[in-house]
Length: 533
Image 1: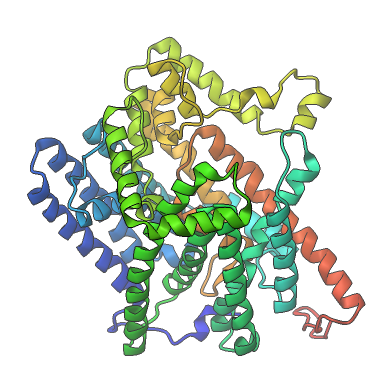
Image 2: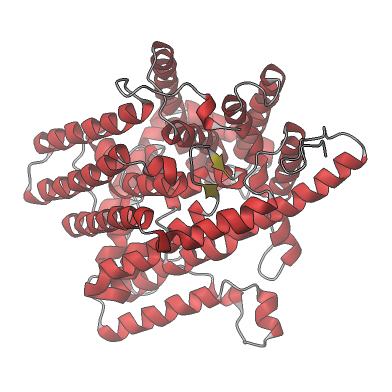
């Protein structure tokens, strides 16, 4: 399958890439100008200035370079870093008529540090693309490991649906606790339920030869409805939100990889999507709030009763508004809060508040506390090993005794005991450990991310991206270059991502053997021998 089968854009035509990055930059500048009228205080003006600098640097780089073609996944993570730290906050707060710096503890310092992160990430990505020695790990992973094993090739539809059935079963069963290797193995298969949502993009890439799309689409829609129902039943907003985001980001990867002209048909489709998204956002905003309210009843109500109660809360608009107002009031009097964007749906795009909280907490750490934080960060990397490994080597480490975040650590240093499972910030973590050497710490944290992500794709004109990576599109976009802590990021890169690739390959190998044994899998043409195998 080859992305070049789509009609290429001529040099004079406006491409989807032009429309996206120019549109985002104009929207950011317009939001920044509006902020001057919303709140002209020095703190807010300075904060807006840092955000606009970041947006200009990152968006211009991704627009005017070939980064989205040569390194699509790391480029997606770079765009996601800008969005989750600064851009989403600027646009959402402006649309809500609120000051960018409202409800933040140290807004100017936070946005300055996040601007440093974005600028360092952009400069590093530029150097990484042009300095071949820096690309050796990612190319080795793509060309010597995952590529030859088949992790980058699109599987046939029958394999996709079988893998998705396994993933959905794993999602329904759920994973185990500490030391439950079998439970963790089952939970690790759940990501494969998203594979059928790749069928439309594979169909487009193949020029319409991948499958009978009219036969496949009803099943894809049915799967989406099933995931929505399952998410409502367990009061989980993630599944409902992830479906449109996964598909949007996968198509974004594809359209940014190869220049596609902006046609009248494309603009009509975009307009329809825009209207649908606007209506859907209004519905989803209230639904998300209703699910938060209903969460308090999750332990006492049955699945059917919980869904019915959620629907009743959704219809009670005064109750939803009172919930939002109470959350805003609580944030004004609490020692710690995570309220920032008033729209709970848009809040899923922004991690700004978490970074601000943690920058506030680590800004006055003593030297001995910094050393203690560094030792704890190393220890949390050691905790990534399964409990069975710790038991085998008799390390006397009980992972059940260390169920806390770095955010918990910092806030308990600052306020004392009383807070649990507080969301931390990898960049505040890096600042606490590195101090004035913070930019160099950013480089050490960002470069491995580029290696791991681009190791799941091949450079060149063809759009060759691992199905596993496309199933992780939202995670790569939103958390790819961020995260709760250095330990959490290490786990995502060194354990979670390779584990998914290995599980995908093992499961696909077993399925391929069984389906061929029963002659349910059509033969394919070998590129080496030219014969059907």
